[in-house]
Image (cartoon, rainbow over all chains, first blue to last red; front, side, top):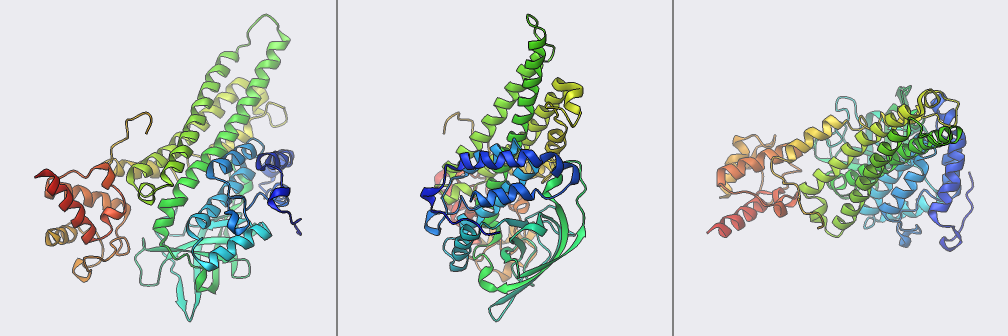
Length: 395
Length: 81
């Protein structure tokens, strides 16, 4: 698809552009959900609105948006279609790794310029057969010979793998490296082949098409990130994931609450003078939504403060807070949408009313299991053997 | 003190490789130190040296090598005197 080339000055504000995309995403959300298909129309619209590379620094041609600004974009899209917003968030998490760790490497800097020009969609291959979702361990290893690499991975999940323009793949640093001694490699279309191994017929988030593949790739050794993956994971990926996922889930929850509120208001109009039965629950759910919003915002503020110091970013206290952000927002989101379902009743359960929240409910149930909350809590419980929670209110 | 640290690494099987094959400045994470093992190792150090690592020392850097651990422990033990 040929993209119109525009300078930054000619572009409208990112949020305004995202609202235009959200309209398109909302139009197709039911079909994407029903068919479990890739949200092609909305992703094309994201590319046409030049929203893919917004986080790339200005010196590489991007708009240099902060994680907070990108989180807001995820929330806008999340209110329209959970699957599309999750694809966008996962892409931006990969972009954040390039922004944080690719600037000093000529190959990765060049790739960022290309991302801006071509509005690439980036996917991620961390999950592996025999390892599962433990992204800090790999079985496969990258092999470098004469300046070229080869890498094969039994990737049990590569979300939207078939539709991506490039994939960021984790692996062991070398064939003789320990499983936790990992690298990350950028493979571009043309560098790799994918043979599908598993499908994606799920309860929710059906449009992310997170199928499994056997990935076979080769390319220039310069495509390997210079930093160890452990550093990338700790300093950009963990926080970007939990913040942007939280932003998407907040969007889904917020739209479910908006539908519940519309339902209660419609009931109130029909019977003036009486407060409808769902009104009390609505008050309750709006308080929960506000609480969820506060969690996400506090998470971003904490991240942006920590950005000023690499030590802080790789501190245990920070990891605990980011873990908690994920667990809290995923649980809160599910509670909120369940409440919205109680308020909207049958109208919410049906898929064809203005108050339908079935898709929201199914989408949000994925929150607790995409990197299982149990895995995160057990990681946090280990960290809390040495780290103390910061009990100051403002720090 | 570095010898005691080395002995702890070996006794507690903190990493899969032989600790004697590593220099004082070798990266322990590269030698296979996992996030889980690093915490368990911190607890072992706290117990062995009767110290408590303050929050500011709880970063990857503090436990990245035998040298770095030695430095942090020395700092804590000096403060105590």
